[in-house]
Image 1 (cartoon, helix red, strand yellow):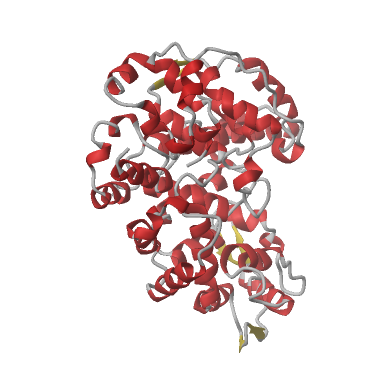
Image 2 (spheres, rainbow, N blue to C red; image 1 turned 45 degrees about the vertical axis):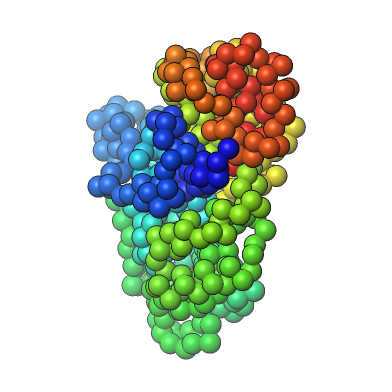
Length: 459
């Protein structure tokens, strides 16, 4: 396999969600520069939305209902809208030409992790992240920090003068900006005082409630002043530790979990000096020769969403019950909009355990109609968020994926090509004899069997 094809596949998986069927024809002839430009193309921004009417304008649906019935109806609508947001976000990952925007959004979605039931707040935050995904980290940090979803999730609505709540201030420093070791417990306490009064109104818009703000002097990261939340975020962004923490996390996600310190030192210095220009940082990574070193290719275990999106980009499919894709996310342990906690999803080997590995290897056969789905979600209220009865209903309704794949199109596309060259990152590690032993030699079975190998789990 020529290096250009290997490098192009690597770039498409890291800066997007893998090779799309339409890209196969001339993939080995594309230059990295042209491919990078394609990936970074930004069209007019369109928001992810839901078709169901907004929960905040449902008054006509509530007439004649008791308060308990109204609450139940609002919860039902919110659940439905969250499902639509989930599927619309997944659809963008699969079908958008703006692959880098959606991959970067996926990264930030795990970085700025929230779990709330309010679909309006979820929609606001998701679109804030997608809009700023390749923009400026300062803008992204401010907009996320002032989003009702984040303020609600981290209890800052309850952060008031005289009764500071430290949740938000702690996580902003520990998980979103500087990382542990770069601030003290006193900095958290003083930061929390500065964030007093930050909240949102009943319409779901950010609001600084001046009467709840602590106007006293604060000492934060060595500076003294009558700081507000805005001042705190600006002081945090002045710290080189912030650029280093974000760059390290991006390197681990997009390049290699084993950090190359001299490279990250240079990247983070450039990131800081650029004023936190995300697009510039990502362009530097994907344009560097070290990114295409053998040690960085095929070394990442695909997350469940990456695995699903990658298969959906390669296999031209018609999905009759797209909501069934949420069941797969749940079974595999990564449900969009529902990270396990404020730290987001884990990565690497944590994606693989005995139950998830077997399902991951069987999805190609299940989606091709060669075997039934025989798994049910674990009883885990942390994931279910109180939706146990709904889980049972999902299991009953969507055992059959109702997916139709256009194998004729795949037969034409791969007629003069080796499927493994486009489906597997490190072909050298693959035992093609054993793959073909389980095949009737057709392109269809070859693709299904290749996607059912441990090697396909890597990108």
